[in-house]
Amino acid sequence: MSAPAAARLTRIGTLYAVLAALGAMFSVPVVWMLSSSLHELAAVFAQPYRWLPVPLHWENYVRAVTILPVPRFLLNTVIITAPVMLATVVSSALVAYGFARFRFPGRDALFALCLVTMMLPGQVTMIPLYMLFSRLGWVDTYLPLIVPSLFGSPFYIFLLRQFFLTIPRDSEEAALIDGASRLRIWWSIMLPQARPAVATVLIFTFIGTWNDFFGPLLYLNSPEKATLTLGLNLMKTQVLGSGVVEWNVLMAASLLVLAPNVILFFLAQRHFIRGLSMGAGK
Amino acid sequence: MKAETRQGWLFVAPWVIGFVLLTAGPMIYSLYLSFTASTLLSPPQWIGLENYRRLAADPLFYRSLGNTAYYAVLGVPLGLLLALGLALLLNAPVRGIGFFRTLFFLPSVTNAVALSLLWLWLLNPEFGLLNSALRACGVAGPLWLQSEAWAKPALILMSLWTAGGQAVIFLAALQGVPRELIEAAAIDGAGVVRRFFAVTLPMISPALLFNLIMGLVGALQVFTQAFVMTGGVQPGSEGGPNQSTLFIVLYVYKKAFQEFEMGYASALAWALFVLIVGCTALAWRVSRDRVHYEGGAA
Image 1 (cartoon, chains in turn yellow, red):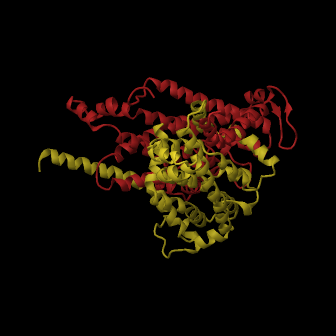
Image 2 (cartoon, chains in turn blue, yellow):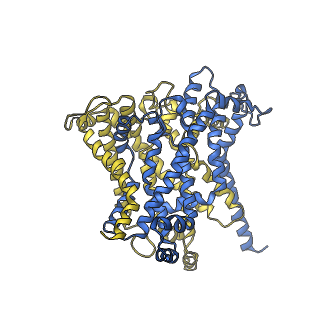
Image 3 (cartoon, chains in turn green, red):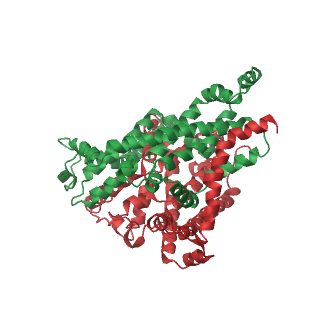
């Protein structure tokens, strides 16, 4: 073997070794979580720890969904997430089309303002919003979590606008000459062509709403109205408050809440990457 | 009015209405609230600068400020370094690299409460994996979240585990660096280190600035981990041993939604706002002449 080839092999070998070591460090917590979730309680506290749970204690997962009304939490989460996804994508795409295809006085200033609000920390608005929603009698309902999505979300407006700008105007202009309304063009020409961007928005909105903790924490008081994420925190409080902490059940419940995220991630990996790099490219 | 103007405004109307009702209006009202004594039930009473005077003398405010600064000053640079390191490794054109990219990115797409529970268990002083591993090496691990000195480092450690999200952004930037540039530098005799600092780093500086600002803004608003991991069973007990994880947002939350001091909490929120805007502006200014944008100014 020639010297450069040997040097190359050594380099690649080192790279794999470093990647494997780091990879192990990054994945070991999850492996441990999985292992804990399938152990009986005594084995969770055993020293030294036995990694392989034999036999598998699947009943931890049954307990995780029955200790609190988890199916109810799941339903609640879906009831919030589905309309938020729909409303966010429709409203953001309408606004994005307005910014991408119309010339009107004040448009650029307005778009700049929209970008600025993307950076605004939510803490300066959360107290008045809470007072407003409380005055409207919306506290302990899903409305404060759903209604704001009707007004578009700056990041998705930005993302969709950038995508609309890359779509050629030809078919739009032809449709205009044929007398199609702008709304019709938006629906039947722009949206179908922007499908990848729409998918990215839907996925990010799903992840954001499904995993939101602060919103449900503020607005949902009744335990039976909790979302999965809020319910997981309720479960923590209950389990930690009991004598021996059932870490196996807590880990099983956590894994169940994580699962949809992980599945979605594997199904739509490139959308995650696109959304993230769009954010950085601005 | 021209038809195009009217239609354009109609399309952007949802956002404009939302901006007025859900952003600008509430911001103005919260500024007003910060000059009042206000609970949820009683109407606000104007007290001028009293809340800000109280804030300037509030030891818990300074405590939360210090905790947040500690978390940001230590956590953000460490996170950036780790993310950049990961991205450089993951940029290597070798077989199976996609698997590693997924592996490192995965922790950052998940649920903050579930991750907090996982880390609560990992950091358990007696039975947690971390201290078990340390014990196996003959080191007595600290009490982590139950120790005033180790609670914040524990949360920083946890935040490093989610550095994959920033690494993806670095990776996208690295893939945009033209190979010719690096090869030209190599031909000119620049070594690996020189090539990195003279070519790669300037080329990815916009991504660095983006990650720095987003990391900073995120760190200044840290909440969920502290709320879930350092709170006991009783509501109101959040904040860790001797308030060592009382971060600003957690303090605002407690004042507003546990003690219903809406006026004082608004003043705290505005202090945080000024801090975030100030830090972002500072990061912009300092980096303005150092960030390289392909094709001229941004």
